[in-house]
Length: 218
Image (tube, rainbow, N blue to C red; front, side, top):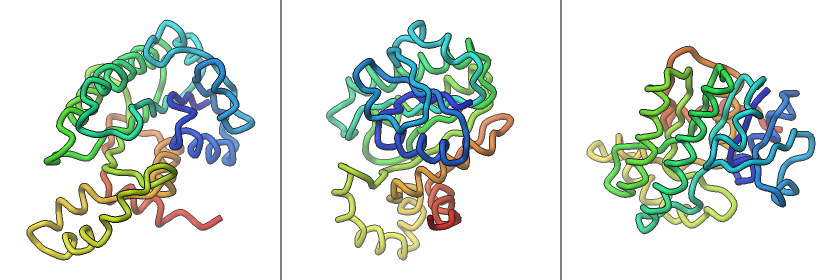
């Protein structure tokens, strides 16, 4: 059983569909009125991702907890929103995961260090620290920007990345902060769900890309 927060987002819907295709049972947290956005076949549970008391009882019986809650379209101007949503939701998720006896926690953090998005990186790094402090077995994925529906503008940066990846002085940063596709991200999330770890495993952009490349075409 896989418990998913942020289930109605574009990463959540994609991952749930893949999990169901692999015959994995999915329990999806959402707010009342949002259930129509979920793939058919998952178990719908209602609650507030910012308040663990509204859903922690639904976590009991699940093996893996996937936390995908976050402010849409992150930008430097959304520092207050990151603290109010991203930070509070990961606090709630860790609390609920411990209450439910979760064996494996999957968290989408962010690639760092980076010259931009300081507040976002601080909040996501704080989330990583909470996971460590809670003693959870976890896979932490660190994408930079995920290209997908409503997230296409960064395609314009591909020529810049192409050049930076070929210059020795910028190659490492360009690879660590590289663009990835929704397909690659979904494949990496699915791999994390299907291969639980003991301790904490961190998956950076190059490995996320390989997960998508290794996946057979449908």
